[in-house]
Every structure is written in C-alpha cells, then in structure tokens.
Length: 237
Length: 309
Image (tube, rainbow over all chains, first blue to last red; front, side, top):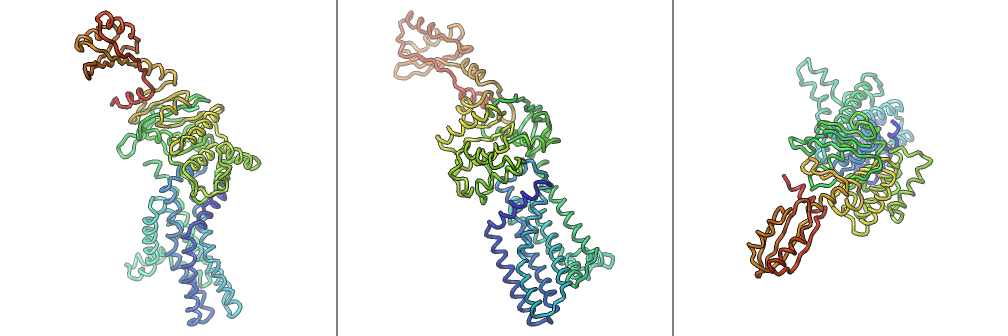
C-alpha cells in the first residue's frame, strides 16, 4: 500500500505530459458544452442536468478506452514494465495506482462541467440532491469502464488494440440493458441488471440504491482483480 | 550471495536457459559472456525477479527469487538491456520517484540522489527530460537508478552498450569502483571488458554454461591453446613430416605461397617447441624466415567454446 501515492503521482504526471490528454479534454468539453446548450433550450431546467449527465455517461464510454489503453500496454511496449516490476512493489500496488490515476484524471476531466451546475444554480432551480447522486453515479460508472480498460491493457502490448477491444466490451455492456427487452423472459431481468446504464438512471433520478452501488463496486473490484492476474501473465509465459 | 541450481526457462518450446547452476560469492564481479540469444538476459531477468524459472531454483542472499521476491527485489539494483526509462520525466524527478519506490529513507533521499548524479556524471543534465537525452546519458541514468538504494547486488545487462569509447571507459571505472563493496553480475559480449572488470567469467551458449572460471584460469586455458607460426623455405612435405614428429605436436597445417611454406603448429598444452623447430631447420639446412608464437586470447577461447555445438 505504501507505494500507491508515489506510483499514482507518476502515472498522473504522465497523463498530463501526453498530448492525448488535452485532446480528450477538449473534445469532451466541446461535446458536453454543446449538449448543455441544446438541452437548455429544450428541457425544463430541472431536467437539464439529468440529460447532460446521461450524455456524459455515453461520452465517458467513448473516451474511457483512450484513457486506459496506455496504462500497461505502453509500459510493456517500451520495456519500462521491467523496471517497474523489478522494484520492490506488489502487483496489487501497481494495478491500484494505475486505476486511481485513471480515475483521478477522469474526475479532473469532468470537473469543468460543474460550471454548468453553477450556471443553473444562479439562473435556474436545479435539484441539488439528484445532481450530487448523478455525479456519484457517473464516477462509479467511469470506474467500471476504466477498470475494464485497465484489464484489457494488461493483455496487450498494442495500445490501439487495447482501446478497440475495450470499446467493444463497453458497447456490449451498454447495449445489454437496452436489448434486455428482447431477451427470453428468464434472461430479461438478468440482462437488465447486468447492463451498465440502468443503474445510472437511478442515480440521476436522485436515488441511491445499495444494489446499484454494489453492482458498480463489484464490477470494479472484479476487473481490478483480473488486471492483477493479467499482469501476472508474463510470469507463466 | 547468489545460488543458482538447475535453472531452466522455457519459452513456447524453446529452452532459453537449460539447466544451469552456479554460485556467486559476496564481493565478486561476475561476467556473463555469450553470443546474442545465449540466455544471458533471461538468466538475469530471473535473478531480478522479473520472471520465474520454469524449473530449478535461484536464491539471492538466501532468499528464493520466486517465493521471497519482494525481499530479493529490495536487495538489488537492476539495469535491464536497452535501459527502459519514462521519457517524459526529468532525470532528478525520475531518480526521486525510484528512490521512493525503493524505500530510500526520506532523510537520505536528497543526499543519495546528488551522490549518484555525481558518480554517474549526470550533474549537467539533472533537470533535463529523459526523452531528450542521448543514449549514453540514458545509459548512465539507468545506472544511477540501479545504485540509488545502495544495493548489495547489482545486475547489469550490457551496461556499456551504445556508449562512445570515452563513456565506456568511465562506466567501466565506475563499475569497478562500485564492485569494491558490492556483488555485481554483468553481461556483455565485449571480451576485453570482461578481462578488465570481472573476477570470474561464465560463458553461456545456447542456454548452457560452456565455461566457468576465473579470469586467470581462463587465461591459462587460453595459453594452453597457443599456436606457433613458422615461415620456412624448403621441401614442404618433408618439413611437415619432421614437424609432426616433434614430441608434443598435435596438429600441423601447411600452406604454400611463392615457394615459402607457412606452417601453423598446435601443441599439447601449448608447449613451446620453438627450439626444436629451430634445431631441425638448422640440421636440414632449411631457411627459417619467421617464427612466432601466438598465445590464444580470450576471444579465441570464446569462439571455440561457443562454436562447439
């Protein structure tokens, strides 16, 4: 545990040193900004952030693979993994730091969207409670996406491959909720529960249901566990 | 310090390291010598706990590299081949990061960093970005990183590769100096380097140990393979027969150019038979133009040992 702050710091630094980070941030804020404008002109203002959060979730799905693709794949490609894993650090510390760095970077990314919240507070009448739970849900959802991306990144030395595979997995998980209606009856509820998006809607409605939190947290823990295993693959190759 | 017994590492059906065993005493500088792909890097990676062996065992300071990996990793400094570094970091930033990772106490950290910067001649580039450095500097950053925690054991994979002659000299001097109080394993395919730095050499070929001896021992072995070059004018076939009958001669090969015979004579245990050659030349009135004893170098030995299979 002792190495996690140090490792996370280095990981975060390398995010902000790479041009990709700024591209991601710019695109993210542009799209969200435009959508906020569009939502503002159409919805009643208590609904605006709910819609914006829903879109942010979708954009998160698109950018998560870009955030996570380099985490392990790049170290494997450049060989720095050899320096990293021969230092006295555990696999657990390495994976946790990488995940934390990705999550902190994500939080940093959505931070500017709080400006919209401020705008609504000044000129509108938003429901603060559902906004807070909405952001909480979004961060949990991002945690799931990032842990999946991290896992895929441990399996590949090619960043692009890691990004594409992650994207496919995320899309499937996203669609699972929508497609559940057409599943046979005994699978319907399972599919609806397993899909990523159903759970987010509760959060944006202002509902904190322990089932949703457990769903997201267990997925994160599961994929972090798989990532540690993925990192170990080199040992039995 | 290090005990390796029956170590084998298999990659997808290929045996990179095949049943090797050796020991390293504390304070020794051991050189790993071998052609490319001989298994040097794999052996070092196993010792540095980067990958476990397929079978066999290796211990560092009495700790197994698989089951007590963290303890072993805390004891060693490792410089991998090609020196992978984070290109976006600054030199002192990187060293600070690694010093923390290797648990150099906070109170000593700054002191250690400036000491290794000094030792490795990195003071000019301490706040430069690693990605902008030349190969030579990056190599030295790697070396500085390896010694930052003052480890008892240093594992250096090709520490002088890619350096210019001046830098090579500096790095060799540094390694020798470091070796005064540490155990060092280094791999190289530069033979004079081994003669200069190491106390003991292991020559690896195709995953197996082809030779293992002290530098002096190897020199003696090499000496025993000394050959004698003779240039002589006279009846070639007859001369060859005479030479072959000198006691101790193992093999005589002849080449003729412009009526001058050139002989290459191998003797048992490198026996010096120049006198006998001179005597027989005088007796038979052959004209002895040149005679030279060439002692085999470590290089000849290396070629011989690694080309056997």
